[in-house]
Length: 101
Image (cartoon, rainbow, N blue to C red; front, side, top):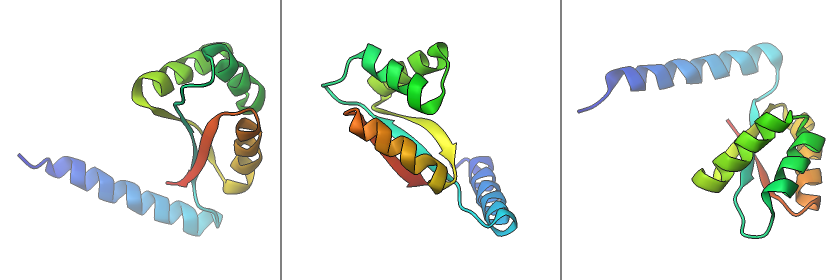
């Protein structure tokens, strides 16, 4: 069965994004953290607290989402704000990437 409401919501979200871009002059991006087999939970949590200004509880939740789902959106905003955070996380050995919403 096709969920027509889901389709309508997606179209509405796209419209809101377009309006936001035209009003503010910037596009919305997401900083995504990906799972790896190298870093410990403690290291990931410490990096999220230090570079993303997450509190410990939020950082722990993100770490668990990354572990179970393979990735987690850890921050959103303008590219210019996310790029230095992404670089810092990458420098710490984490797999992070900025994606356009």
